[in-house]
Amino acid sequence: MKPPKFEYHAPMTLDEAVAALGRYGGDAKVLAGGQSLMPLLNFRLARPAALVDLNRIASLAYIREQDGQVRFGAMTRQRTIEFSPVVAQRLPLLKEATRWVGHLPIRTRGTIGGSIAHADPSAEYPAVLAALEGEVVARGAKGDRVIRAADLFQTYLTTSLGSEEILTEVRLPAMPAGAGYALEEFARRHGDFAIVGIAAVVVREGQRCKLARLATAGAGPVPVRLRAAEQILEKDGLGEAAIDAAARKATELVEPDADIHASADYRRHLTGVLTKRALIRAIGVARG
Amino acid sequence: MVTVRLKINGVAHEGRCEPRKLLVDFIREDLGLTGTHVGCEHGICGACTIMFNGEAARSCIMLAVQADGAELATVEGLMRDGKLHPLQEAFREHHGLQCGFCTPGMLMTALDLLRTNPSPSDREIREGISAVLCRCTGYQGIVNAVRAAAPILASSR
Image (cartoon, rainbow over all chains, first blue to last red; front, side, top):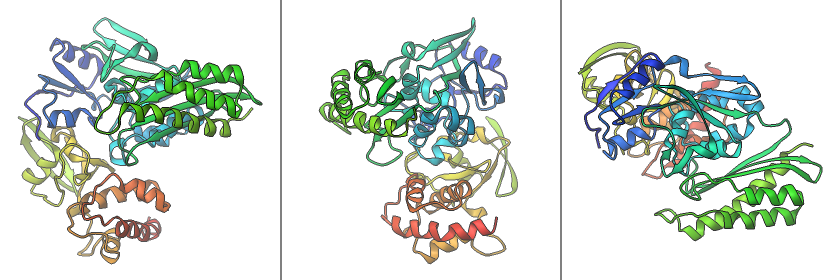
């Protein structure tokens, strides 16, 4: 239960971090908040040759609004996001999701970039990134590239980030004013990994649905956008029958796996139940 | 080996260790402060929770080298002038501990909860302390203690 040996680098700049990472040819790990990586090291499930610790790079922690997006430095702590007025105003879904991320002393260290790059299928931030159609910026030796949420998550704990790239920024489009939102999650204990979670966004015009977004956590190897369920609402409105139909459709759109916490059937069932709950709550707080 | 210089409970310390040394082991073995406990060693049980630059953090999933230049506080730093901290007093008054193993983590977690939410509801207290496991199942006493301490800490601010 102690980490194996590794070389340790704590660069003060992003350029130094990219250079350090590049020297190990994919055998180094980036250390952000460490709330997932450190347990993996303690269990020796991860044995990297080196750690490149981003915690000394002050320029990687910020929240700023630009071009209709809210942009987060990868090292912005989850606790900072929880209390950010910009997030409360522009991204209330992210604020709500943050209260489900681990526990208080996890969120003081855990970062938005780390959570997304780690790509745990039951994590909340990847589901929010998928629901809001956000994107991330990756820095490698050749410079920056932007990766859309849909192109980022590949399978369990696996993203399209290169092993010598560092996720530096997370960009989420500001939610339309008055948009309804909800994150519904079921876990054995608040703060534990989600068995299933559903992120929902609804933009309404009376009973008409101008836009619906639904994304899952824990219902498969990556966050799943429930597009066919969204389309039911956008076509048929926000009445009870449409909500029921969307929730039923949601259960057909996921391919969950079984593990020690829950069977695949149970997760599929939860996907429908939580989709309905999330939609009812999101519609309830939507204005317009 | 790396050099780690930090302040803990207001006192400056310096030590040398391997980069892989966990912060909690550095605190206990190198600094001799054994009030912070080691439970699960993978960030689940919360017994090792300390204050890191003023915020609660789990010291079993941080490296000692990451604390270089940091200010830490542990359970040993809570007493003032030979008197228990009001939160410790409330834990004693309301039977907020039984075997005491989780208590250091409970105290440091509750301190950060009350710092950021000075008058929490019972639900918020439960959510806050759910970060720490108590195997004596004494949660009700802990909730009572945190609830009782909240106005005392708020008025002393």
